Length: 272
Image 1: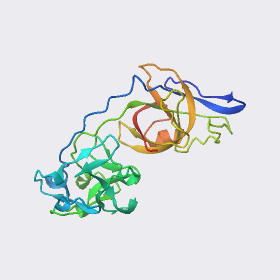
Image 2 (image 1 turned 90 degrees about the vertical axis):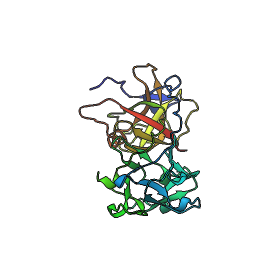
Image 3 (image 1 turned 90 degrees about the horizontal axis):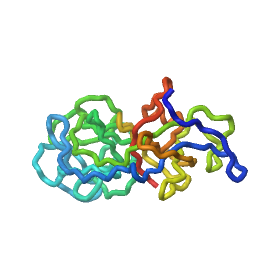
Image 4 (image 1 turned 45 degrees about the vertical axis):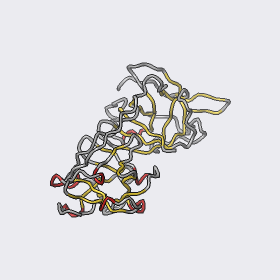
């Protein structure tokens, strides 16, 4: 088992809480990368394109011959948006269904505007756990772009500008806990829930209930977790821990429990 601190049930003002290990992010926070803007190319070498260079909410996004216009200039943001013409790539009607079309829309920060560009050249919407996809594998100009279950096919592969990186740190996991253990928020601990603990030293302190988008740097998988616990921390450059995930959340992000991988390297983004 990889070395990591054990998690113990302690008392705080008479209430048992789970004492967790996390890290003050001060000196370990990565500086935001400069925005990278450029074309997103896919099937048949064609470009992700805003139809007619329209800026109205609901303008379709399509595949089109690359022409160097502003309708094909995309900026991956540190907030996990993909922006063109001052607006965001958006899944229509907040749908998570196969075949839901994408469009341009005013940026809202909602889950249907969140995208992760992976090392495998997929562009994934974490809320749907689906890939940006050219409808019917058509390479014709005007072919609509949609989301679809990730298949690895060529109509889901994209070359995009480098995504801005947020802070990188370690996410560990709780491991076994006593039955009925309580988190610092007073909730009964559920080791399969999409929840996490952050450091007591994190500034500003994240309120209980805060949602955080966590992305595994190694595989591009993302998951939104809810903060419901706090922890003590030991700050070392060798172990830059920032989050402690339930075993279930850790596994869903690709962490290995048996044999215990100990941690995964992640970026985290506060959603609110």
